[in-house]
Image (cartoon, rainbow, N blue to C red; front, side, top):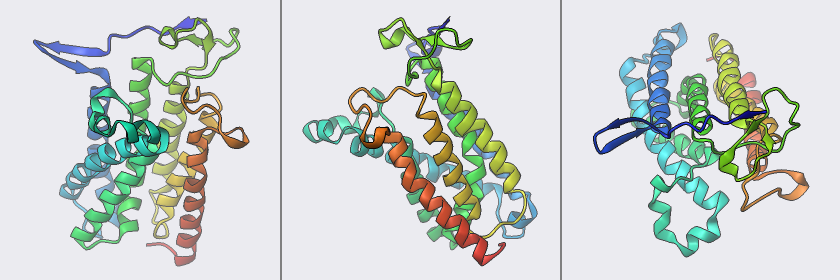
Length: 266
């Protein structure tokens, strides 16, 4: 069995200021978005539609707000509504941790709707543009989870070559390094598939639909290896909260993709 390296959560200490690895992962995610978004503006279908690097920079600004606000509200409402109803001020204490991807997704969608309205663009055209640029940010986040030794996996066969003990769990048992599974599936694999798929013009909403389907399916699979939240455990039908939240996500993705196929290429 392997043992989690127990990284120092602070990557760099500058006097009284400590720069955390997880914070650096956010920076990596933002830089990758800017780079990939700029590459997207050079693709014919987007260049002809007038997309520029300035649009990408503004999208990042709107997206950051959506991720932070939506991610926090999602965690509060989806995972611990009772606790935060009794301690409402703690909902504002984001530095204590607690962010939910599905809430962050809803927050980003709201931010993109605002961007689309202000720029006079189609909402689905905006989400189609950004969808292939998102998975690398997800990959960076999962890498940050691994460095922090959080969101570890379920118990694994000790003979599994990459089974790992996470001392942070308080148990000396072999576990799946599920953060790395998600890094590979929802991050790198989803990025490659979406980037290749989106290189050609697609029906309006099809790239967005492909993202929802891809993430939903891959996250659903990864949840079988990820330790459920202790305060929720396994829910009905033997599924976790993460899996249940993926069901409407995949359904929406299928509907968007079929709708886009019917409408034809942009």
